Image (cartoon, rainbow, N blue to C red; front, side, top):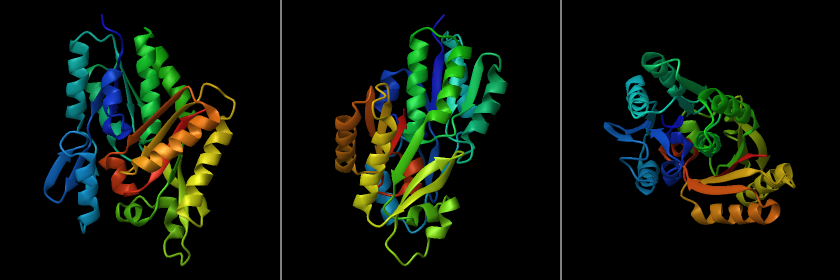
Length: 280
């Protein structure tokens, strides 16, 4: 029998890393008007951000149907997987977890464990990568699931967003609503709190906000040795590379990855954002 299979959704933003780690990825859907695309399959990152900038209406994102997840679960079990751990975007941000839970009940509730990570983007990605490594080492479903649940609260995510325009258009402004209409040039550092977007700090310039994000990250993992870090960006690779180099020089994390976020996150962050997800 094959090892436990690990499944996640496209908001994990793992790209080729998912393939090399043998993680199955179920895409969310992104829609511009009557045009519908599967996240990470039908629309390149570059084309998505071009459309985002030129569109007068915000694109809509939608979770996978339970049938899409059920098809993946059935395929993996049919191929001999001993069980499945399915890790997903915060249920406060998407219905993907609920779709996955429904699909698991339909296919084989005894062999499929579905987990709401309360995270997003590469925060979710880091948990999925660890689960895949645990599966490779031969751990069983219960152990992998327990470790993933233990990891989830430890994930910290900070991001600097140049403008709140896209968060507001996408209806994800939440606790950041008080920043709208501020006459000063305020750049927020945002985080996830209880799985939802929340304000962490307000900074006067984008450069200072990025510096503060790096300082916060390195101070929290300084000297811990086994930290895992992911730098995320929305079509800002040079900025992301700079942030990654600064973190690597300061704390030498055990794992450091970087990726451009896809449409599901990019719809709300807009172009030019940069962030860090890490597990101390």
